[in-house]
Image 1 (cartoon, rainbow, N blue to C red):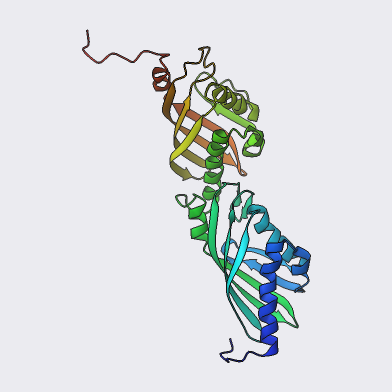
Image 2: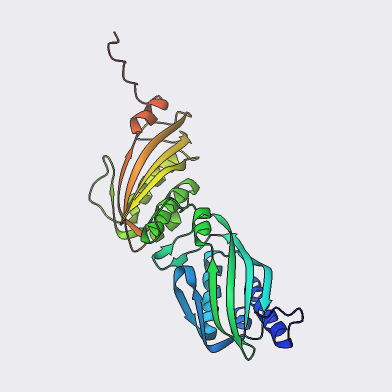
Length: 297
């Protein structure tokens, strides 16, 4: 980089071109951004090892971020340029409401907001970008998405799917079940392990619980991932305002714990084993008697 306090006209043009890329992103003007890219340009998201090429690649590069973070915006902090390149430091912020593509698989929406520092190194020739290397703090992003406890790779994506499922149950967004569960999905649950497959199995179970507990919510207490398996320890709570297991509403509040072991394939849940403290829940609702203490008369 030139250290001159009087940058050349070309350096000033290169800095302006770099800044225009972020203006284009904020305006979602992908065509204008593509116009500043050479036909043979190489574009790479370095932490993800994902590459794009040419003007079409620039459109895909920008759309990818906007798809994963629909409300995202960039705030440029500094741009330094000389006659051949520009380096831009900026902050990207937004809500993860769309699929985020990674080399290990697609991370489904977490609904979490991120604010991440970025740095782009651009090589520029004849007024167009010929190379762009995109760097960012992937560890900070994953931590803000709630995925830091998982090891990098496919396990990170699998944990995201599992966490997303508990968010979906809490929000009652059962219309997205088909995006999280495979067509061959099988549920293993006490008294419901019938061998029937498909997302409708879990849709029916969760619908029944949400009818019984309209304010049903889940908290993920712990997560362990290994290979294609994710184990989640969770707590559920809600007020009993509808029929449950044939019993009428009691109006009582209950909180109970459970564990779910998910097996994943290609970003979807294909099988899970659920164990929960149903007895504790029923006791809190007055629908089951608490066991007598040992030695009681």
